[in-house]
Length: 325
Ligand SMILES: Nc1nc2c(c(=O)[nH]1)N[C@H]1C(S)=C(S)[C@@H](COP(=O)(O)O)O[C@H]1N2
Ligand SMILES: [Mo]
Image 1: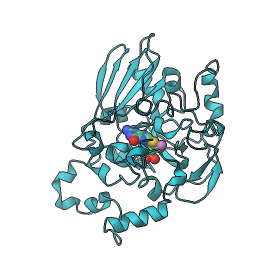
Image 2: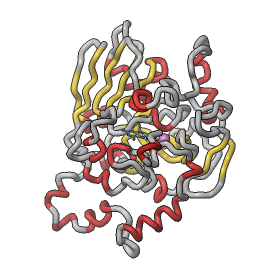
Image 3: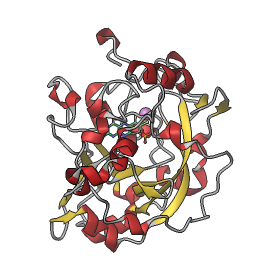
Image 4: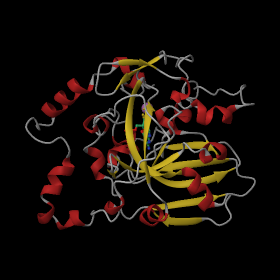
């Protein structure tokens, strides 16, 4: 997408640089050859000197690590944290994968979340309050990016069904539309008016209530890093990664199907459903296999990303829809 602008966006993973080379190059570029890669640890070490940083202290730290839910077994090793937290898609902060430092500018406290639209009583809830009223658990999920790479990570969070219950949608509601924060001062790409910010994604209510739909607050037994979508992001592991919207500020219940960010940019390539299917190629590349993040290993991609037993029934009767793009 947007190749005419010479962007790396949504190129097939085969056109990208492997993380090892990528991290080396990045370290050189940023003059950090001997130091840690993220600003976080540096700032944390200077915490006693930087009162402003204390305001960012995490009142939820005590909720981690949460008990792991063993219902979602995994057939491959966990992706090393150093890859999944430094190789990210978060286009608000930049058009390539190396946005982990830039994303530290995001202020995640206070963080208001609006729940509105077709619900019994619209509300705004503070993220900390929401997280405290939910019961957090850890789940290891596979994540398959539409570009052809994948990772396996331990998310912490709560079932999205619990948020739907809290929202109490009206009978007329059929979809949940989710929106990422909008703050061009913090997120440089949002200053580019020709992109349809804010980032938007959506699920049917049935999908949102499916047991796999997980709202993520943490990663690797800790609060989730900003670059991975703090304070609250979705993990919908049977769908391509772009459905798993980051840094959510709004859940709007609606009768009409929402149009997502990618669909607005390129409807011919990115649709509403975006379920993983190795047999349905992206218009510009195959989806038959995936590169395992942090390695040169490729594996065959699985139908529904391996989660068919949980989700295939959701799509009975919808065969005429464009379910796999
Ligand atoms: N707001 C927002 N959410 C987003 C994106 C984004 O650019 N902005 N990228 C998506 C894509 S394409 C992927 S693959 C995943 C990446 O999540 P990760 O960085 O935790 O691996 O986030 C998804 N959620
Ligand atoms: Mo992605």
